[in-house]
Image (cartoon, rainbow, N blue to C red):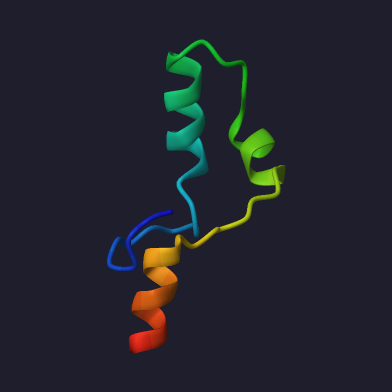
Length: 53
């Protein structure tokens, strides 16, 4: 996840993320990452905070 205030041409910096992964020995491209499904799971603390908002 990225902060809302970062300006980026894409919703996610796939090339940058793929570069970080490759630097750690993973054979991955930006397109590979873009194709992966993901899910944001909020912690109980965040849910409580949102409920109080």
